[in-house]
Length: 503
Image (cartoon, rainbow, N blue to C red; front, side, top):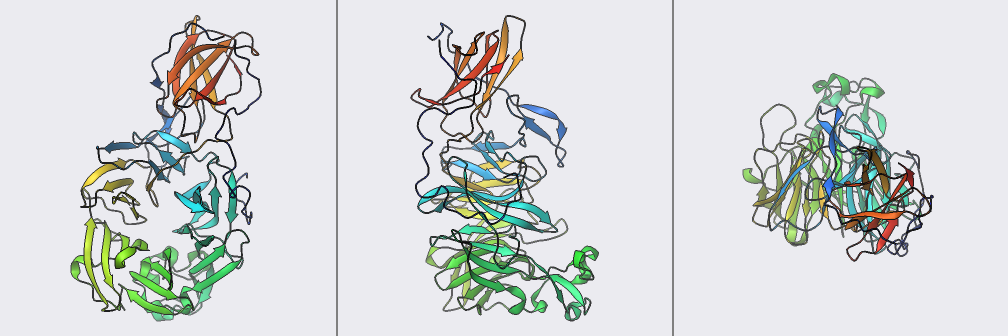
């Protein structure tokens, strides 16, 4: 017999605090509640099924028996050269806005609170891998919320607001080696918009670029777009959209739409979608140069031209990468991941590589990730897909059906063991058998499940051991009064045990 407490508890190793990370951050804001039997080993069976209800995309969600969490049905294909790791996404239009998946599209972790999530990825903080994302509410193309950092047990390390009393925008939450975070914010301000055809006493979003110290929340750098970029550089006008014409504060004009910030030794590389420009902003705040747009300091050939871009990053060897949306409205245009050779001395640009795939077109959002093996991941933004490309631009993996779109998509190595216990559920069968279900949201090291059953809740016996398959695994076991499950690693060690439930 195996004695199992009726309370939730965790067994085994793997739950140690992550170095100096745990508890190191400062909570600046919060927007979400913060003897074995003779039974033979069974063949595992995945148990996810389509829900009767659909998300805002009209596509039925994937549901489970052991948990109320849901996720979109994502299709993934891979080949032998696909990089190792898991897929990190933020599907829109579904109950789960933060989703880690394996290469079959099966969920590994679903953000459990239902909070709005973008830019879910793995970064490094104080020498340790951490899970980071922006969490908050979307407001007309931007957001108001906080940056969140969690350790490999999904414990909150830090929640970071923007500085100067501003709300953190959804577009950027990048950690630096100096223990700081790069963030954006979109405060509404009064402005004279008459030079671009708007009201003289109007309203606009004035984008801020900030660098914030993570442990203390101290504001180290605060740059305001309106102080350095004239409205005339914008490719949008107040007259383009009656809902954003600048006449009232709730119809604020968005002339800049800053959507990424990257740190360089000499300053900050800032992307402004609505000016079609990447700006190098010096340490003192002055614009050193403009790449693209109506006032580009660089000569850009037609094959390297970009528009409405996202995720501009400085890479080694003078390469700048970005997601070139290339269009904003209508049905024409092709999006691509774009790698440019940028010669800052000669002020010239040449195309290094264009990553295109099967007509994918994202008129909003999107990103390009560089992998350690030389591959690239392109998230197609409003086109709900992500493609992995080999170094020569050949597609080697693709995920489709990522909700109603995904701000950014990544592939990362990630090893995590939650502090929460596994979940278990039972569906009664024909009287002599019942179907038991096991899952553990966020756990990456589970190799198999031990199902325990018995009429004495304090002395359950092993009913089945099955190989883990997908997010939720099920096994047919003999009918009993109580059930629990144990998560086992590849060596058969118990990682955690669920609560005991009445069958």
